Image (cartoon, rainbow, N blue to C red; front, side, top):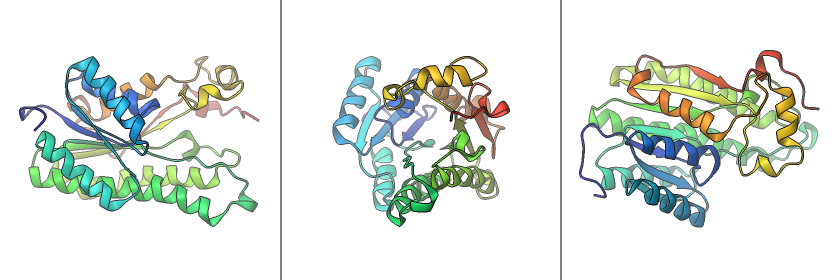
Length: 257
């Protein structure tokens, strides 16, 4: 094992974590003493991210590249976490894809790609981790990544928005299935967030600073801190809930168009 097994140490799997919100979540988890299995589709990005965190914290991050929409890979990811750290207690289904497109011309191929990662990957990661936690009898936490687009209509994001609304319903439904095993399941719904992807978009920061009541888009750390709280013992009586993190945007919903 990479670490001496510690009964009290959280062990987390975070998908889509090579950069942005997922990477910030891994960092915040490790600040709190967790061991982390960091996944990303991009193998080079996975290695760089894990190396950076291990340099910061000494040890405790294992990078595992692969497709978080593939069920065989998901099952292997959980097995790898258990092999290296002895258990899994937290899963954060952060991997997702946003494919903009006009409703009238949206292709079946784009639709399937969004469904596979955002829904299939989320559902089966939750299933695999819940099975492991049930077997361990340790309790644990599962967190889904939703979006404000699951609450408010957004131009050219019909397929994406429906997946995000769906994962919030999944969090509610799994309360029935998982509570007996002391597994909490929640979702967070970020609004505009400054990541490596969005910061390169023209006028993104200035536009969302103007539209957001608190005066700025979120940072990845804003989202990560909420994620770490919801998967910690401090939130052990919170389950089936979605927390919107958007600086107040969805309360008044000014259009970006």
